[in-house]
Every structure is written in structure tokens, then in C-alpha cells.
Amino acid sequence: MDIKQVAEVLAPTGLGAPVLNVLVPNESNYTALLMQPHGEIEASVAGVRNRDRCLSHQQYGKFLDDARETQADLVITPEYSMPWESLVSAIKEGRVPAEGKLWALGCESIKLSELEALKQGLAPSATLLYETLVPDPGRFIDPLAYVFLAAPANHNGTARTVVLVQFKTFPMGDPDHFEINGLQRGTRVYQFGGIGKNLKLVSLICSDALAFEDAHAKEISDRALVIHIQLTPKPRQDQYRQYRDRLLRYKGDATELICLNWAKDAQEWCREQSKPWHNIAGSAWYLRPDEFDDRDATLCANHRRGLYYTWLQPLRVHALFFNFEPATYLLVATKVAHITVPAAISRRRGPQLTKSYIWDDSVMAWVEQVAADDGFSVVVGESGEAKDEIQRIANNNPLEAERVLALCAGKIVQGGDWHMVQQLDSCVIDSSEVILRLTFCQDTHQVACDFRVKRLKRCGNLFHILKTTGPWPEALADLKKGFRFDWSPDFPHQNAISADGRRATVIYMGEEASATQIDEVRRKAAEYLHRKSAGAHASLLAKQRLAVWSRENGELVLHEPYRYVMIDQTGDTSEVDVGRET
Image 1 (cartoon, one colour):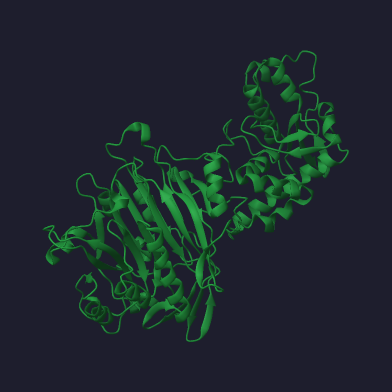
Image 2: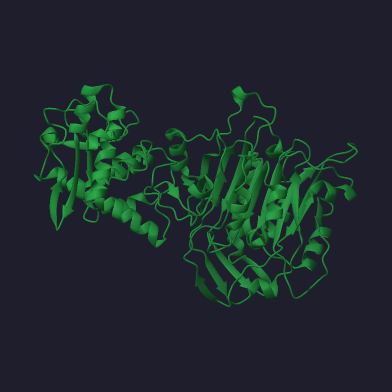
């Protein structure tokens, strides 16, 4: 894999390297339009392409129309997706990127001889460039087509449309050796920018990631936007995602990755035989700017449209996953780095999903959807009697619903900031990248499914306890007259409100918790309430309105119901004070 400057490729043609909006390191945001298509693909000795030729031509043609209409600065489709006839038609009709825009289009497979014929056919409209390979009629290429305008290097004359084609350099692994036997490999990865103060952009084509080594990461990681287009049923396979570790392990916050796969549940056809993948999409945007906007209002606005927050703990990176359903996404994003930008306006807040579109057969167009289906309505019933309460909270703020559910289950021992999105256990993902989000329920991994069901059932059991006449602390007698679940940043360690407006902390630890674990949760909850209280009296009242239940041998147990009603309680002592615990 040889990383080659686009400027070097263009020089022999008399064209200069484009100045791309996405790579200018100023405070201006850029727009990105991404397509995550439905997967009906066919694989043969000729390569990989869309099975429904008519529908795909219409969908991708309309997508390119939208790219022009929205004036998106960066336009991306995944591996093997863009029909060449759709792209060629657009170019010949003058529907091409404006100056400063870049289209990075994963195209259907093609033979080298066919690409040469396209080059000749497009010559009146565009300059098509690609690396020289020895022709091999028995093999196909896996191409990424960069489309952009380039002005003459001598600044005389008009800009010309360029189609710079990058070939996949490394085959995927599969039992039938489909690409090992059929793929004609390229050797180059093209780099836009990276000279002087400019940012850089490079793209990997799916299993190129397997050949991405430490030396490549060192060469491109600083101030780089890396695009990874994919067609894979396993986007988080261990070796496949190691390139992200290599890129993101370095200190600094000026590296971002856009990973774009096909939508979930692709169907692969070969000789009229269908093979369902049962895959997730896994398309995501990885970044870690210091100024990332993690306010609830921002994350929830993204959530409604189909972009979901997680925190990738091992790399300390924000990982925002797209809804797994077929759609196109229009985003506004901050540059991967700001250079000589005044501090007062330099806030790299990350991508904001402004619109998402789904295909409408009745009008044969991509139409905006008001809200994406996060799947929560399908699983929230696992919370039993609490279903309506949790759904109500999620409808208003999905993150508040996850905080209520965490507190109900006693998942708060990670610290007083347990409710922040980088600490909230359902928002944190480990190196496996299994998504535990409760209000984004499209991850079908068994670990994720088990986590959601267990958390929701725990809440349902707690709700039932509060609705019945089980063991109650006297301080919470008012809840018998009615209550609702609630979470507020002003009262982050309380999750219930009585009918007369008094807040409380109620936790159910289930049957599997040990006495030590239960005591730790109770003490931590009491300490958090103490720290958040305005004074000693308020601290004591808040701790008196704390109740922790569990089950032992099937019997419901209320733990230490009188701990904070003793006559010597003053409310001014920390729960973690050494003397307090003797």
C-alpha cells in the first residue's frame, strides 16, 4: 500500500490539486452526505454489483441529484455500491461536484478493460485517471471513484472534472476465496491535502484495513480525515478494526474516521441462490476533539434523526453509530483540526445529523424522515408495568431514560459522574464495539440483547414493588399515593417523584447481588446525595428518601430502612468517611 499525493497524480495532466472545503482548517463547518444502501447484491466472476439494476440506477441517480442540490462538501457511498452507469450519466449531463467539493464513491466492480473504455467515453466531459496495472481479463477491480473539479496548474483556463479511481489493495477473507481468486489489486492509496497547513484525507476500501500497518498510521494520522468504505457482514471483527487502534492510539485530537457500510440484513445472490447475511450495519463516525458537544440537546437531536452516541472506552473516543436501516444522511461537521483560528470561535463540536432520508417508491426519490426508528418501542415492553413510564421519558430524552434505568438497577458505583455519557454504562462500549445502548436497540449481538432485557426487567420489578405493599421505609410513604420516574441534571441521583412533587432514590438489585455489592451501592448513592445537597438538613432528608431492595431466596428485602432516621443522624457526615464506617 503506497500512499501517493493527489497533486503528484494530477501534475502530468497539467491540473493542480483541488482546494477542498473539507480540508481547509478554518472555523467554517462542512456538509457531508452519506448513503447507507439496502443490500441486494450479486457476486460472480465479474465481481460485485447491485442485483436490481433499474432500482439501483434510480436510487443512486437521485442520490447524486441530492448531492448537487444540497451542495454537500463531502459525498460518500460504500464499497461496490455506485452503478457506473449512474455516475457516467451524471458526469455527461454536467451533474458534477462544484469547486471545493469531493465525491468519494465506492463503485460496482469493473474490469480494467471496461474502465479504459469508460475513460475514452468520458474524455469530452472529464479526465479519468487510475494507476497503471497489467491487464488481467480474468479478474475484476474494486474501485473507489473520487470526483472533483481541478483547475489548470498554470491558472489559465477553466476547471475540469476529474475522476480519480483508487483500487482496492488487499482482498477480503472468505471460505470461497472470492476476492483472492478474482480481484485485481491496486497498490496506491491517494492522499488529498497534507501539504503545509492543509488537513489530509485518505480512504481505505474495506479489507485494505487488513494491510494497514503502523507505518501507514504514523504517516497519515495527524490532522487526517480517514474514510473507510465497506461491504462486510462483520464490521467489528477483531483484525478488521485494528487499523482504528493504530490510527487513534496516538496522542492528539486531530484524527477522525468515517466508516460507511451497507445497511443491515444484506442479501447476497450467487447463481440464483440467496445467502442472507443477518448483519449489522456498523456505520460510524469516530472522533475525540476536546470541544466535542456532548450536551443532551445535541445528542438527542442526533438520536431522533438516526445518529447514536457511544463512548469507546479503550481508545477514549466518541463513536457515533448510524441507524442500521437503509437511508441517506446529511450532516454538518466541524473540521478535523483548526489552525490559527481564534480560541473564542474554535469549538470542534463534531458531526450534527441535520436530515435523514429514506427511499419512497411512490415518488421514486429520497424523502426526509422526521424521526428514525431506534427500535426501543419493540423492547421496552420487557419493563412490564413500567413500560409507559420509561417510554414517556425516552420520547422526551432517550439519555434520561437510560439514566433512570441505570439508577433503578443500582449501576452507579463508577463515580459521582456516573450519569455523564462517558460514564453511563449503557453508553460505554469496549474493544468489541458491541452497542449496549438501551434506547438504540438494533445491535443483535447476544451480549447487547441480554443487557437490555436484564436492565428493563430490573426496572419493571422495581416499579411493581413501588406499586404494591411490600416493605417500605416510612420516609417514602408518600409514594404509595402515586409517583412517576424522572431524571433531572439538577437532581442526578434521584429517579422518582411522588404525586406531591417530592423526589426519592429507589433501587432494586435483584437476586444476583451480594450483600457487599448491595451495601456499596447504598453507600455510594447516599454519598452522591450528600455531595449534591445544599446543606446538612437537605442531605439527611435526601438520604432518608433512599431505598434499596433486593431478593434473597425469593423474599423481598429492604436494606437498612432505619439507617438515616436515627436520633444521632445530623446529615453532615460523608458516607465514605473512615470514621463513619467503624
